[in-house]
Length: 363
Ligand code: GLY
Picture 1 (tube, helix red, strand yellow):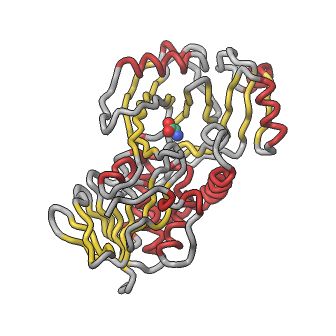
Picture 2 (cartoon, rainbow, N blue to C red):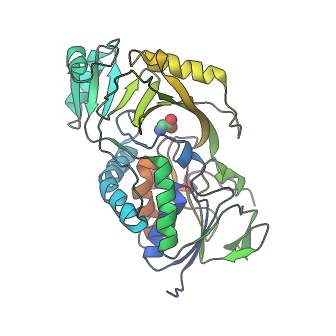
């Protein structure tokens, strides 16, 4: 398919891949440049949660609305990726349980939000007897979900390639190419790529390509496996305790996550393992006997106001899809739709997410 719309995308994480896939479906020629391997950054390191109640409790309505739209798009998005790629992505609308000691606050939130149900400690114990009972109840968020983020990354890359997209792993953007004041392409160590538009979707690394207020926020996570004699039937919900979340996946329990400003450092610390284990043990009885199966770290793309950067930049021809912070997986289908439409001139940016709300580089 020959097209007069040529797009170069920097970054093959969940955002770059899904926007690229949508643009390719709309007939654009799309090349994605990835400094490392596809979906090997925050997409790989995350827990794949599609979490609204816990992640967006203090967010402005515009972000909550965007999250709700994206959550509604998720089942169809997952199905389409699976059909196109031939790979399962493990999407599960499992619900989420938010444990807390503040029964009054929980009851208040449930009264204000029909998506949430307040459960007393007894109701929580009756449904999930393995929970330790150290909390005075929980909020049940039945519309929440999780996806196997590592399978998702692989499947998205396959879907993009099958749709005719071009993917260049291990090829970093080292500079942008200008004609006058307009960006017309990207330079890599090997060659140059021309495009009618360039999209920067490089996660925590976005601020290394152009001046952008994106800060890496490190998160360490662990995965635990049960001892052979343990009975572990969680029924699948994501469980949030005090400063910790637990995600059952493939016979393991993912436990996350630390939150730390440490530049681009992704080293692993024993202290993080102790911290996460201690927090998890306060949620599920008997976890002390579980074996540490994996320990990893990733970098979230943070912004000064905690809101994403989605839309045109101060530079002509350059679009941004970054700053998703803790919500890259949740937002993926809505970002793919919005950004593909925007780059094709069919949608306007959402003011609160417009990257131009921050000043650009000094000329
Ligand atoms: N959304 C989970 C995290 O960022 O740790």
